[in-house]
Length: 408
Picture 1 (tube, rainbow, N blue to C red):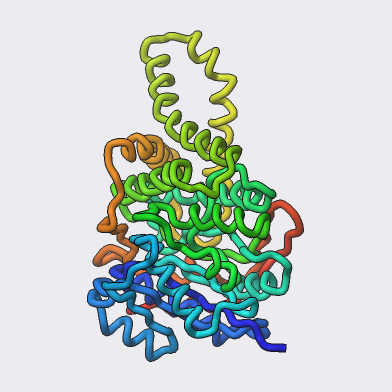
Picture 2: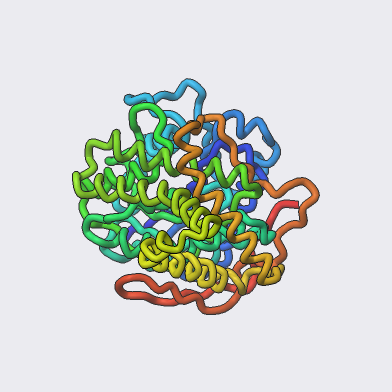
């Protein structure tokens, strides 16, 4: 039997070259130190020319260490003229087809520029590719370069929300909007048949891709065991711009995805409306308190109570998921205050999306700020058992003792 191949593919503009180097070297390290992988690992770096130009020495060093470097040609175009990250993803897909790597024995594990892996990630991939599902989605943690800032505190809630995403994703019709562009595993022939090409710029190409896969192949999504390890935005401005892109991605899917069934289109529209309602809800709460208009709180309280419980649970459980990886702890009062700031940025993001648009030039810094200390070793995966609860059968995964290497 031919050994399966897994391509670890980091797709990005490439200007965050230090973050890419850390992610790439985490793959290279665990490829050498994970016994009985059950697959042949390969590493592909797919970057834009301007990304490569930002640090040619870094990319050539990674090439010499074993990475395959693909610089997307400036004149490369797709039949539908897609732009942005989808263009780079489609270019990598075309390369696989040309090289005979588009078949059922090849899988693609997608990483963003800051997506580091652990031995648990490798173990989860090895387990998944032996199963019947065609697309795997897992839980992402955000401990790398964690500073306790409002943006970083807000990010821990995303890990807890991943359980909702996984539950919805494995349902036949996926009634929610959540889907990762990273820490997903796709069988290569499935990805290459569906493709990433779309008309113009798709702000959330991952959601568009998920909709197309589900339309063509049905409920082929499963839980990918093991974590991926990423980092949050370093500033509130970048957090706001990131969330703006997400909202435009949902609106793009609702308005311009012909494969989207009517019931799913309605549920995505409802998700968008719910996000928009966050800011008015805050305004009503503040106005009620300011003008002592208690009846408004009596009417809305029956609904907002559930929302506040969900929010508090997301912060507490999200932080608990990260606690073992975080060397820096912050006082409770700071955690609450910064959490409220981060939540407020998320609340105004959809309204910001109404008056501004994401562009191809949007750049979210993921290289740590100049002068900032590198992530302590204890922030990164070490030995222990990580249980990953989600709907259906669940198993735990182990993380070996030495963390991924980082650049100087």
